[in-house]
Figure 1 (cartoon, rainbow, N blue to C red):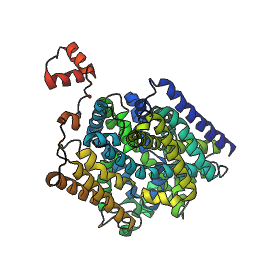
Figure 2 (cartoon, helix red, strand yellow):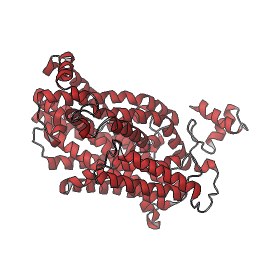
Figure 3 (cartoon, rainbow, N blue to C red):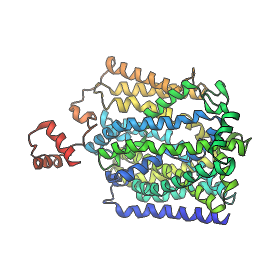
Figure 4 (cartoon, helix red, strand yellow):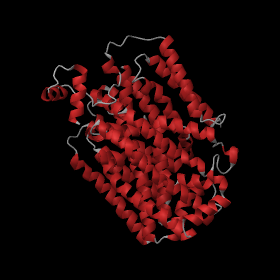
Length: 523
């Protein structure tokens, strides 16, 4: 027990130090440096950062719990993340180029710029905050459960919740996105080490190898190995739900505010393309907690309710010495801290740039206000964890489905000039209202399909029809190049820099082709 506590405490201190050391690499103290790392993160940092956002405490708790309770339906996580990375190969460079060209630092920034309405950016920031706060609360809860479990109850849940808030806030406020990237390196090293070990150790320790384990699973728990998993059709997780949820989440993840923060932090567009190619390899690690959750069916049967989320840690604490339990616990705790830090940073950035800066007295204090909002957002999630944990947990039911309703307004609006402000806002309002109605009345899935996907289809239809046949509002005098995202396969054009490069390469006067050629050679 003492060994586990020393290891956990030591790594939490190291986490804060890494975040603080990252400040030394910052070139300036502006909002862009703090919120998107000065748009200078290379392939390694972008890879570990975006992998860290996708591999949260859910991977240790929820994935094992779903494997324990249902089995095959949990594979939707691997499916949608892999499909989302493929979409990110195109969408990531497109958003990166658009944001760099216009000096934007968040999703709400893009909405305000595309439609020339600052209030729309503020509305997107508020809506995104509603859907992101549950994730912060869930990461605090997840870290609390992990720390309490691996310390054999020595660290109470209340103290663990506060540690999650304090450690994350400590380095994010000071070091921003770069600090999260540095901590992601430590976190990923521990995740790969511990899960790789557990993938070999648990089957050998309890079943004398994978042959015995998989044989028993096929013979005794066959229901867990095919959709709709344990519980049959009454679980609601059949083929229709699996396919629709995979489609919806893979579309949503590319415009999720934390994913966009990773895009905007990249050094260049090619970094994001290489990242999209290699990120699916990280998903292999997700199979480990899923399999171990099903292994726990034989070792610790009878777990019910929230107790099933501890399936993996029941195996760990039962079979490993305290120092090894501490290492696994640290890896799981960092899997909460890294994504939680990015969630808090994104909320702070959107409020500092798109909401509070609308007040004239605050326009020159964006970074300081953003850092203040980070503390407030984390504190609010911590307070709700203590006083009303079920409130935000209920909101988390519509987090991805609600964020998906921004797709027509933002992503379609960046590639289709005729998308109007009225169309985008009407579609968004209808989509959010419909998904909330379906989810909170217990109709998700509806007809075997994810309710969020149905709401998105209605949202899209309304947005397109209103844009084509509804009021158009004042004409936008800007050229397409200033409104749409057209940088899918080239670096963003930077006035002056690109001109000098074209002259140097002998492409002066070559028009669009010369710009593209100069950009490719530069990379």
